[in-house]
Length: 243
Image (tube, rainbow, N blue to C red; front, side, top):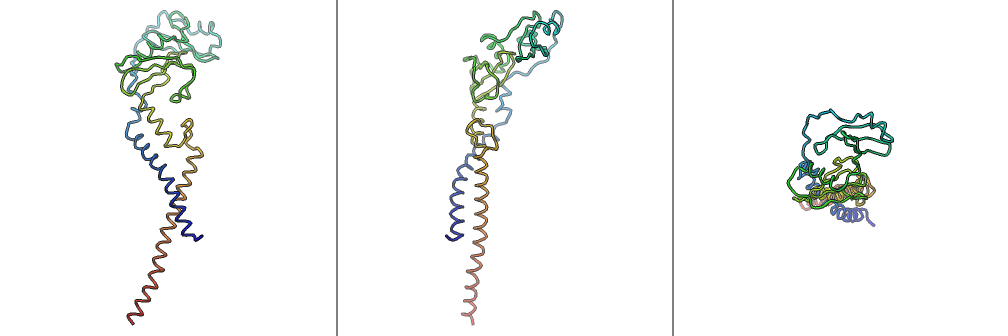
């Protein structure tokens, strides 16, 4: 088989395969750059935390919790729903306590999780549904479970994820983020968990792109050499005719 024919065939078929993926790279890249990343992250869905003065009188001392909570490691004072609470770190993970009575509040029930989500939500939509998930969905696959999922009315199905252990906002999602995650899957070619940007498939296509460029460059140079070879005999024939 002649080398030019092999190079041309290789270039053609590699170019076809790479071009299909290049379309996905381009379209996904357009979406990811057309919408601001803060909008994708859903920052507008959550109210900004307003600083407020807190009356420390009558609060349970952290030292008291250190003696009563098994595996106590430390405590952080917060305000949730206008009330002071302690997020206590233990050997078994974080837990939530009332800072005035010392009563344990976690795990949060559905009504408490809905109230916490409602207080955090920056828009006016009502809660559509809430559910306690024991298995994290793909959109928050790295977050610990169980976790409360609270979905609101509004454009793009805004959703807040609340920790039943601490009452804290774990994550926020909307259809804009879900679409971003979907096109990101095509962009990095990780069709499993959409996190590996150095997977075997994208490396294969990278080298296929290199091979396509290399064969295309060789064919370009070969075409110039061929034109010169054809041009020389033609010039010689013209010179003989002139003589």
